[in-house]
Image (cartoon, rainbow, N blue to C red; front, side):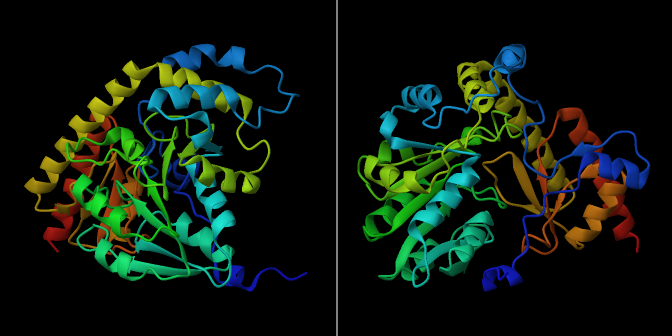
Length: 365
């Protein structure tokens, strides 16, 4: 049996350390996980209340067309139902895009570092990956456009970008979309869309009318807190969606996930409450960074990439021993950094105390 040659040099996605694993390793009773950009406030109480009713008829396959959630999302964001495709998280939509448009001889353009599944899935399809390094945490969009040729099929733009958290303003995105050739699909990955505070953000859904080669990705995993149910979606022109549909698995989103997403959309009060708390706690963490002369990017997401006077691995290991799971920037291609999910207020205060201890220890060496 012979697997694809490209897979020999690839590694599966490695999630952050699990809570029970860290408890056992360090003999801790309580762990604060701040590594995967999950919503620390959980998910809508309405979903929790209705969940027992949703767990029925599990012997029946889910609706492959996702008709009810399709209708709900279409009405909520103001598009036609045929402009939507649903996935097992928006990362499955990334996979579907790559499966549809990429092949040997084709290429795709993206920033680096950014969401790693763009690259991962493109390589599996045998496409050439053209990565353009970030400049101060931002996409180098001029160089990305310059990297496009006749064989380019997909241009990936993550805004806010993971792992830096910075967004791309309206004027800049419009300038890019005006210049990208029509044969290139431009994917605007907006997994952290609900956390945006910037007034100059691009209205990607409204922009679809002017740019037929644009597709927008969003998810219920982050602000809506449904990461464990795995459901996200893509929005594009009907012709693009029609091209993607044959690459989608027939029953790729579960009955429970579809129903929970409908309920979550209706509970905008919960969403706004958690987003507001996130913004406050994020600003507090930024103030801590300024007090300790730590650099950071002006994030528009629910995480902060912090620049350190030591390796990211060193701070990661220290925080781990104190019960905090974060993400080291070394593995993300950003040395001397850590990426922190914004947690609850009391947890962030404890985190800042522990980080201050480590910084003081390093300063006295």
